[in-house]
Image (cartoon, rainbow, N blue to C red; front, top):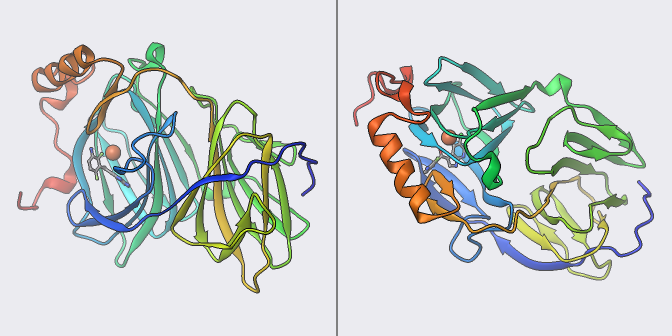
Length: 296
Ligand code: FJE
Ligand code: FE
C-alpha cells in the first residue's frame, strides 16, 4: 500500500492497556480515558471490552459525545429509551451520536465471551446538544480492500480510494488493518489530526523501521506528520486499528458519561437527567429488558 509519505509520523507515547472492571462485572482494557491519558483530543475513551452474561452495561446515560462500538467476537444487544433496539455481531459497527441525551443498555447476548472496541469521540460545543442519531453498518457492508498483503476495513474516512458512508460530526478516520508477514503499510492521515494505533493481534513495527515491535493491547500515540508507516516483520498476522481525528481544541468538563465544555453545563446536565428534561424526558418511565430479573 504505497501512498508515498513525505513525513511519516513517529510514535510519541506507548501504553499497555491492562484489564479493569467497568459496568456490572465487565472487563475493559482502557487506553484513552485512563489516569495517565485522560484525553487525546477529540478522543475521550478507548476500551477493548470483554463481557460474558450476566455481566454487561445496564441502563446508563450519555450526553455530549459519540460512542463507536465495533464488535470483534460474539454479540451485544443494545436498547435505548426511545425503543431503538438491535444486536451488533462480530465485524458489525454501531456509531451512536448521543448528542443531547441517550439512556441505554448494552448487554452480551450469546453464551461465552463477547469482545469489542468502544471509542468515545467528543463533539464540538455546537454539536453537543444535537438530536441523538444512530448509524449502523453490518459486517457485510463494511468495505474491505486487499492489496500487497494488506487488508483494510474502512469503517470511517478513506483508504485506498474507498470512502466509508459513515458521517462523522467530528472529522474522524477509523481503519481496521490486517497485515500479512512481510508486508509494509503507508497510510495517509491528515496533518493537523491527532492519530493513534491500537494493536489487536500479532506484533508490528510502527513509525521508525528500526524500532522494537509492539504487541497486542498496546496503544501508540503518533506524533506529527502526514501518515503512518508500519511493518509486519513477524511470522504471524498483525491486526490493528488506526484512528485519527481533528482536535476540537475546546475545554472539556467530564462527569462520567456526561462530557460538556463548562461546569455550568455539567450542572445543567445533572439537573436535566434528574428531572427528565432537555432530552432525558423519555427516561422517566423507561427500563431496559436487561434490568428485569437482575438484582441491583
Ligand atoms: C459507561 C462505566 C461504563 N466501556 N465498552 C461508566 F462501563 C460505561 C459503559 C462502557 C462500555 C459499554 C460497552 Cl458496550 C463497551 C464500554 C464503558 O457503558 F458509559 C459509564 N459511564
Ligand atoms: Fe453506553
